[in-house]
Structures are given as structure tokens and as C-alpha cells.
Length: 365
Image (cartoon, rainbow, N blue to C red; front, side, top):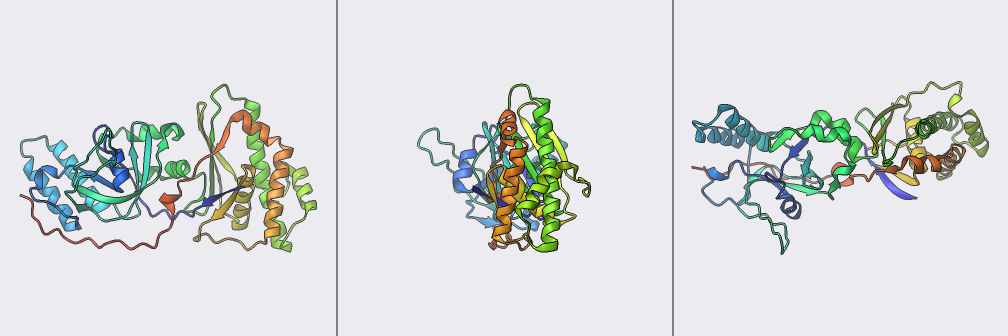
């Protein structure tokens, strides 16, 4: 089994969409330089800037400076750009998440510094088709690998009709988290699972129904196993047989798993298990991971129930038997179900300390 990390999200990060130039021409320069930059102040900066960190006072100063320099221009247009300057300096924060579109996909990054001014050119590091970016208003960013546009949820593209260089998309946090992390614990302590349905031909209703019933069986199994562990600290192979025979008709269980489907072949299937019982949620995460030949590794922030390696092995065996009983491998192949790649770098907890913002000493003319 390959290991997959399951992060615990705190819901404190904000999410931003940022463009790398008018036609995404600076994506590689951003990635190679571990930075993001916008050019809204460039015409106002007349001296060389050497990584001068900016404060909230600087945000107000540059916002008003930009407005005053654009007298006679459309007030709405000027206010929009001035607001983006203020947003980039004041509102974006360390550990916030950036999504930057390219012509072929999306770069995902985590902000690692306050805003600053710097005149050094950002380079893509390529000898051919070099794209140099001279935008001076910047932040440091840890970028991850490019994610294909084909992997993004269908609703994702509609989020980005806003023509601004940078704007907030935190209200779409739930959708973005599902896209970036196939299995995670959200800020409400719910277990959230998503998988990609890659089948491009007509989808069999029977296969779709069988997958839903399989998830029901895993949920019922997680309930039964958690009961046995709470009572006895373990469960045996006899318990496994009982789980399989009871299946989703278990009389003592009220199903809580919810599903959201968004696909036109290919597409996405999202499921959520509320955290009424933390042990059950933990067991469900083990069961669904094992069904896709994965072993979950929980983040340090997650309060994990104390269960033995033997019990964990029995959980994996339970998943295997339920999968076999439901012909899950056939269903998985028919629907083209795929486990998403996790964007670990974005949500990894960090103890890094960042430089404190200090007012710049140069006053642009």
C-alpha cells in the first residue's frame, strides 16, 4: 500500500486567485523564483528596491498614491486596481493559499512572507523561451507541482471569470479543499473524501449504484467496528463476517454519509461523514483508504484513537472482504474511479517564522 497523508484543516487560511501576467506568461518565472508578483506599482517606483517589506500603513500610502496618479481615468477602474494593491499588501497573509492559472493547468502555492518591493528580475531559468518578470510588488511563495485543468472540478472554471489580477475565493474553500485533498478532516472534524470518475463513455447506473452501496457498507462497518473496539478494544474475524452479512441493512445504524456528485463524464464524487463519533470517522478513513490500496497517515494535529497494529490490520482486511463482496474492483474499473493526488505542500503544518513587516524607507515620486 502507498501511504497518503490526511491533514486536519483548521479553516484559518484564506484562498486567493492570482494571475501571472495578462496571458499567464510569468507562471514559470513565479515557480522558478518561489515568488508571486503584480505590476500595479511599477510606474510609480523610481528608485531601485531591495526587498523592502511593507506594512499596513504602506498599503494605505500606495493605494492613495496610485489613485492620485490616475486623475482623469475611470474612477471604477482606478478604485479596482487600487483595491488590488491594498489587498496584496494588507489582506493576503502568510500561509494563505494561492491558485495561479497557466495555459495548461493551475499552480498551487502557500504564501511564505509579507509583501515587499524588489527590483530584481524574476526569471523562469530557461535558456529558450525565457519569460522575465519585472513586477516589483511581491511575496515569497512555496509552489507545488502544476495541476492539470482536466483534474479540476467542473464548477471550478466558473469561479475565475473575475478579470482582476488578484481576488479572494475563500468562500469556495470547501470545493477547493476537496479538489486538492482526496481525504482530509475539515474544520468541523468531518471526514471528507473525494475521488475522480474518469470514465468518458456512458456511465452505468448499476455501477454508480453499486459504488454508493459499497460506501454504505463501509460506513456501517466503521460503526460496527468502533462499537466493538469501544467495548472490547478489538474485533475478530467473526466480527468481519458479521459486518459483511449485515451490510448496509444493519438495523442498529442510522446512515449519515452524504454524497455530492458533479460529473458529466469525467467528473467528481464527494462524500462526507459527520464527526459525531471520532473513532468511527477514523475507522471509515482507514476503510476507504484501504479500498483504494492506500494506507492513511494522519497529521500531527489529528487526535488519533489508540488502536493496535493488529486491529488496524483487521480493519484493512475488513475493507478487502467488503470490497470483494461488492465486486468493488470491477465497479472501480467500470467507472474509472481514481484516487486524487494530494497537495501536501499546501496544507502541511509549519513552524517557520516569517519576517515582520516594516515600513519601506523610500518614498516613490
